[in-house]
Image 1 (cartoon, rainbow, N blue to C red):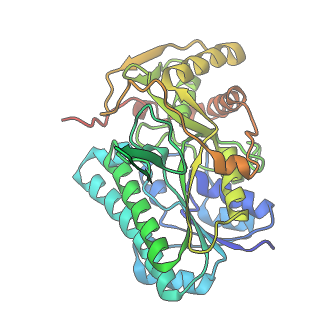
Image 2 (image 1 turned 45 degrees about the horizontal axis):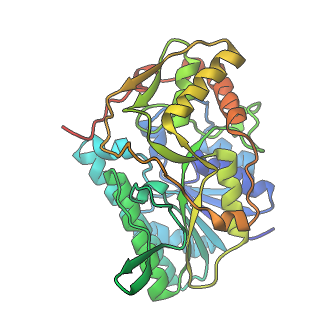
Image 3 (image 1 turned 90 degrees about the vertical axis):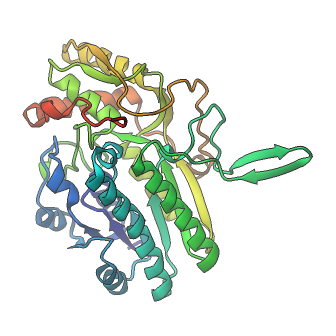
Length: 378
């Protein structure tokens, strides 16, 4: 065994795929999850019961909400992991903007959970490496390259390197910014060891371990406007045959993207190569940057060339409040490159794979929930 890893949020899109990947690479895995997503969204791919998932992988698991302080403390004491991968956030920007209750739920989960974790580690005096999934959406949108090393600021003769400015575009993003500040403070004060992963938009559903043949091993795949990631939603729309591809605003927005199989590969690399004890390590995690309109055109082309599906692109007034005029959006990712990360598949190949899975489970696609319904402005 290569050590015991506790995955908080193991039942989610990334969590269950990561669990399979780590088990395949010799790690012992224990998972916790509050099963929130099963209650509020339907997966396009069929997903097995928690009991069947646990049995299939021979891992430990228990239902636990990270906001439940006594339970989380007890889990950490009993499991005594060598490392923790924290994926237990409410992950949807639209959900956080839907109404007051959803906003408060997001804020509570995404701030109290990480705070409970760092205080538990302090109380238990646990010397473990914690990997937390942040988001590239924490950074303020600008034409200045986003560096893991920070931003050099000049004021007259004075120069200083400061953290890259943060500015969220939703209450969800702001909770992730606050979580990052909490983590860095805990590292500075208590010598916790944390890798904060600023991750791009994850797409796809297949990995080395999930080949699409065994439904028991599928991770969840959301396509609705609340929880579906951009490319996954486009692939689901294409698979329906008669639903147009949805682009918000001009489509000129640029985002970092990476396939699910690369997301879990990168997380494993970070587990295998922890930072120094007491260090707060910020890592940008993505494969490449793409314009949203360009991705819609690629999905449209692949749908026709590979599956004979003709689909149209439809531009909707942007329901979000975000900049669409960033032409030079660039994200540096030196740490993962230095650890040996190389994309394992091309964008076009993974889009083809994803459309194929969506076609297979076409009847499960939530057609009425694909289009934008949650608007930032009243």
